[in-house]
Length: 297
Image (cartoon, rainbow, N blue to C red):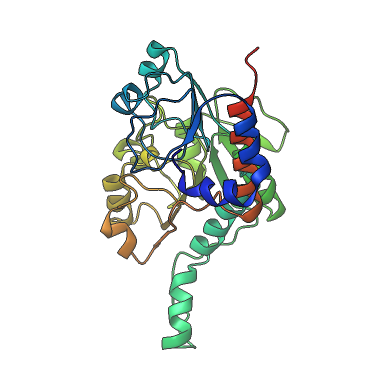
């Protein structure tokens, strides 16, 4: 049996979960990123690593692939479907954590926290820092108003922010949340936060053309998928003052993000940890095991 890094400790520490898998009567494996197989099992639990056609073909008996997480963009879904492999994920385990982390990045970026932390050690009286804006009365543009985007909007409203959003699948849940088209959101938002899945339609949603539509030198926050933003276009927008800053928990090219983003004084980068808490780790393991042991209807 393989082990998945994020689940390994939990399956060891929570024998009831491992016991459920064993009692299910199915052969299973929780597989690490550097374990390509082959795996002669019925059910496999994976984390946030690429699982393409080559890895699927090393699992000839596989009928269920459980993604311990939300995004499915790293899995070759077409090949899985052709092989008759059902793919499921574990939504909901980290909604509150991601929303909290989004607000953390938003506040730290808008308030220019890294700059002022540095000033505390260098020049206590130095407060000459442009681009710090008041949140109350400003506009938050939410790209994707699903569970996480909605939870972020809840928190932002508590700070007195006006909410606009773009999402083709969500009707306006309240008069205070105004659905607009993407060009209007880009032109009118003081802060833009991304909570959309990564698909062929959303890849590099924020590209040079999108950055050219920005009207208020916003802060950009991304806790969804790095591929939603064209990194080169983001760096160009920082260089020419089109945007004020960025708070990123995900980047294109992770786990080796562009060095220019890591080193930029107006950018805060965290290593894809928005989902993380002790409770969310437990919930993710529980949901993954439940999905792996569920009887098909």
